[in-house]
View 1 (tube, rainbow, N blue to C red):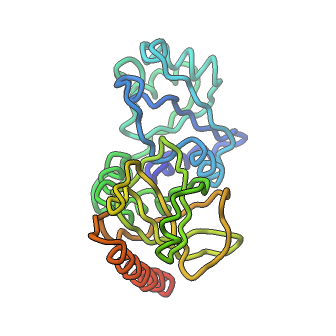
View 2 (cartoon, helix red, strand yellow):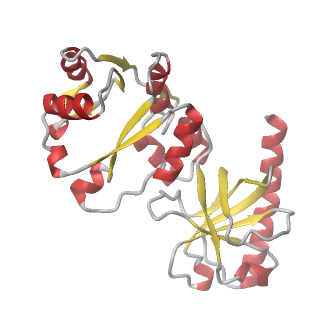
Length: 283
């Protein structure tokens, strides 16, 4: 749900007494056609929360199947938009495609929908400094660790949410208590490495450092997401935490000893304090 999507949503809030609804597919069409798991910028639980905050009242998830994929543009409008959803007004982006092999365009939708007295609003594309805002462009930014650019296109910080689970407790032995986050498996992770950001907790916004990756210094075999809350002590085990990513600090690296790793973590924490203090002062 990036700024382009949010722009498309605006017309549906202006139609009274409309019931603002978003229609999406599950699984993601790309996952259906390739057979490979598709990592999402906004998994379902997160998407629901974002849509609620935007004022959307209903999210309809259409099961994406071979039958659905084979519908012609006309059949899609008749069977899905008219018969199932009973749509009265629709808003789509200028680059919208639908129907078999994406044959239908936004203009096709406008023409077909008019036969059923359905109003269609075609919204222009939303641009930013890097180009047209799109999920692909956001993915590119995240792959490079550019969470600032990703956040600008999303209209909110890119965040990771998960339940705190038991880890190896290595951070504790180094003097840095960490919370091991069990992130949904379909959530897209940014470039592996260290980030600073904010964790909302009990009415406060706490500065934090996050490490994403395999932890090569200890020969880690699986990807982990760990949060260290700066200058805070308490228990967060089994709680749901969210970290809003502010800035990429460095890629993950393998250190020759745990002492060198500890020294680098101290540097990461000090740098994070400076960055987050600067962000607070300038906001």
